[in-house]
Length: 102
Image (cartoon, rainbow, N blue to C red):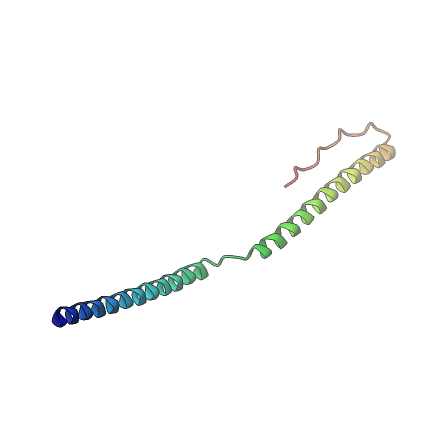
């Protein structure tokens, strides 16, 4: 019986060693995959969410400013047309439509 017990102990030791090797291999594969993924993401030149939020705010402010400027230009064209009419004594030209907003 001691011979059978010894064989079982040896098999248990081999199985334990194999299991340890597999766990180590799994950890190594995980680390390698993580490194590859991080490298791929770095090459994509992705931006952080905070940077996108800042750009969206700037874009919104610029669009508001553009709309304000278009309104101002339309008002100035109106005034110019009225002045030209007064100076020439003729009827005012048809009002121009403002350029489309972007």
